[in-house]
Image 1 (cartoon, rainbow, N blue to C red):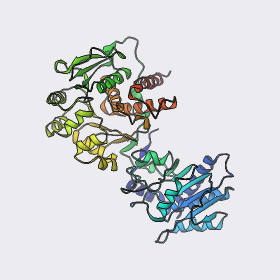
Image 2: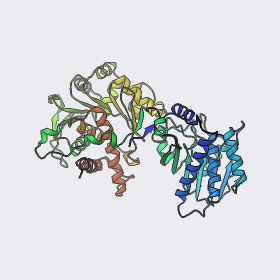
Image 3: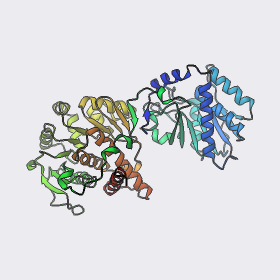
Image 4: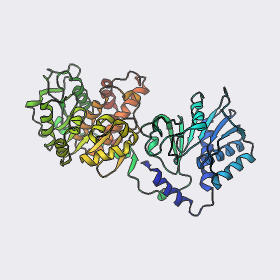
Length: 499
């Protein structure tokens, strides 16, 4: 099932519509009940352990107060640390406060040093926070760093921007939760940038609001429903030409490793034949993967082949010439690494790219994306979804903005946020592997959008599989990814065949 992601503005409209016809406080009561039920699930057989609820001044704090009251009624030792704001609380939050006060909930004014908790519930701030967490609230969040127990965030970890996944403020701080229960609908910020470090495992509770009440979203979580149908079982009556040619254009002097990694990934992801068109002196063969064919880029015929251009390409005049030739061709393109930097520095190459009709997929990391957009990497990271959308619009291409919660965007504004992958991918060469996977899928006839979505998902799933096997995340190398990619791709093909 596809999971749609909604902005704060969209959620406000959903909430307003959901409130229509309901008694005041109904959604807050439902949120508190859902949070308490999840808390009991997390406690498991440790329900004798005390639970600390941090309740802030707004409606997120009201959700926390409702959760505390429900937990106390369930026999849990629930304690509230409530920090009221300077403004009067909403009627719903005031009612939740009175309910908690009337029950068996305990109350404290500060974090007791050395106290042990079975669970902490973060109800300080929700999606409406627009300023950095400061003052007493900041001290509380800092204090949580010393507590060793699960932390459940309500709606969004306090201090995290629900739209962008960035911690609010240049020196901001946010709760680092192990779990988040988010209400009404999922939010993009829980899945990209700082979100994956702070949100932990995310559960969505729609609070009884029907799916029909949700408007169409242009942002979704990437997943198998978007591309699984493209994986098919291979016919016995096929040959290497049935699965396309991939040529990796790069490998200037001293940089042969990058295109070799891309080429290996393309081979393991199912391309029929794989070439490296090297700008430097091409090696005779790859001793680990002798199936890869090496050619001199100047003499190589691009016609009829999918091109992965940029890994280890350098910035020579010849590199610019070959890139221009590729952009002017009808070949499907995956544009990576040095090719992205060359395009970012050249209005002429940008124009050639934007005028293409054949598929083009760009795979920038944040700094390469910043060069394409003429801004800093910090600005790109402050709103990864918007940066990816802007790149896709300017280049008329599908964009894979790499990073935690990789963002895939296309020119019409559709965006995917990828949920697979781990910190093991933060290693040299992993982007080259991603480019090679994408090239292999394009060579097999996939449209650019599905190829980008599947390549990104498979790339992350391969890294996750390696970590599950004890390979990484520390020390995981890009060279270990292609074989893991092959396993994932074959599993998907087998599933598609009903095997």
